[in-house]
Image 1 (tube, one colour):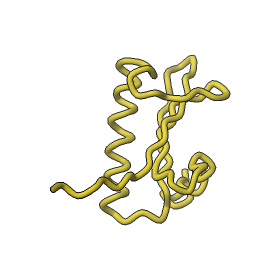
Image 2 (cartoon, helix red, strand yellow):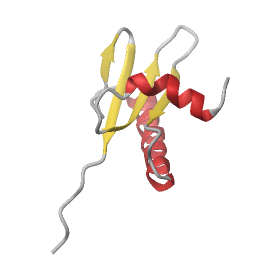
Image 3 (cartoon, rainbow, N blue to C red):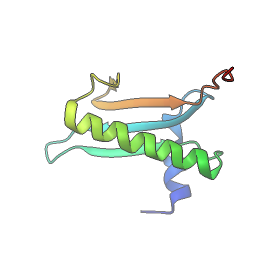
Length: 92
């Protein structure tokens, strides 16, 4: 199976834009869906865990409700949903 680092490198192709932080991946199959996540390797621990939590939640939503609620994109029979970090303005 390889180390986590090797697995992240395998999935690096899923992070197509520099601003991509994570990509949730669902591959439907006859024996059930396979779920995965690609997370950018340069993230600090807090952001890594935030991205992993996000991916877990959107995969759970996909399993329960399908791709429509979150806006998944399908290509070559695989569903993907990307996340990036968007700085918000300070509260005044």
